[in-house]
Length: 263
Image (cartoon, rainbow, N blue to C red; front, side, top):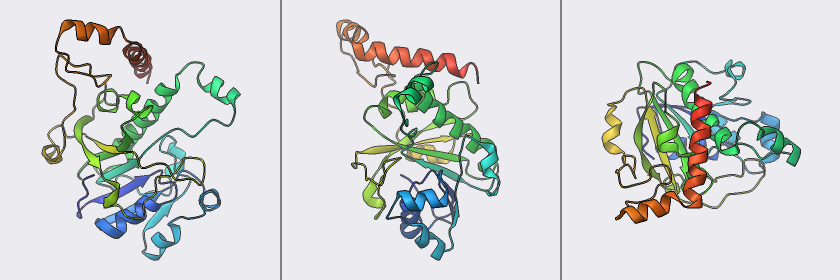
């Protein structure tokens, strides 16, 4: 992840605030505002170890009950005042029951719902949080394993939008001492699986682009959605297209395209 000292940064959905605390302590951006989806009481009860008091002692603003999909929750946040908005390892909360899972998945797959969360985050960040005269950057850090890989983050989220995918960088957690990737619903740490930080901007030719890795598997002999290839023969490509993995990804892509036509 690329962090520059001159940036004004907003972190979104930072469960126990340990990422924000490490970001402030070890990278010292020009300013930092941290936000949590939960209420203060819920967060303190959920995570027995958290960085709330450390941030307050360092005069870092912390906002609770901030839902990036709900404009009504943004009233305590100064609008259009940031250069970068960061969403670390986003994932929809676990369903409380099998009935809730079935109801949510009646019309939209869980894959589509997670993509929609990220798309909504990007859309709202550019419209409401980012300074139009600033850097205009959105970061999403995600793991390169299932189910996260199946969201096709590099290619799907900016389709039919006015924001542009710039590239990605390796997320090295050792650059953020004391940061613990948390389970979204419980006081548990998640295994440190290697992740990448994906970057978007309204500026298609943003200067940061030269420091990022371009989208991979874009060659005509690759399958972009499945992140597979390059295929050396037509037989290899045909076998991949017939595979269960590819068929499932094509279903995810079709459901996603159908959804974004309605939003």
